[in-house]
Length: 177
Image (cartoon, rainbow, N blue to C red; front, side):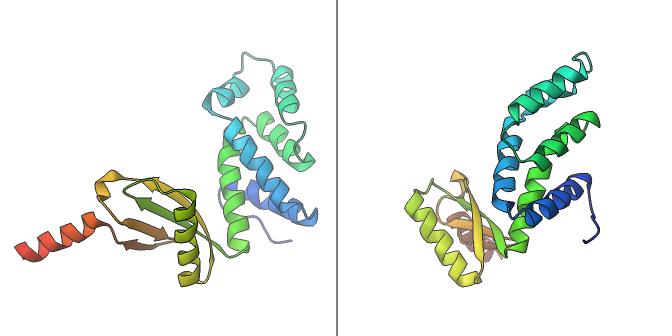
């Protein structure tokens, strides 16, 4: 078993990944953590950290809302609640997803376009990126009208700027230089 490293959210994510791998339930753990991260918004976290609410009541509320989650995830939630670190859950979920993606060779891409793309256009763009990079891509899409046209694609630390805004800026530099 490898030693845990990095930040607290990373260490919790690594521990959960070890348990999930042993249980052959990595996708279920990922879904569980993603559900919890979206359910535990700032207001809920504030209530779970409120010292005016008895710990037993906070634990009961958390147990009731997570009763269908894997046992190891529920155990981590209880530990985080006791240690007043429940606010780490969204970051743990992100770290867990990143660890799984890295292990499976999935690259994250941030695709910024000037207009919203429909599902078919998104799928086509992701397929082209996967073919060119020879990697599985998990993409997030952002709309930025200031690009005017085209797109900016960031995969890891590599940025491809094929936006009309960038082309116009290049042209302006050439004309003034």
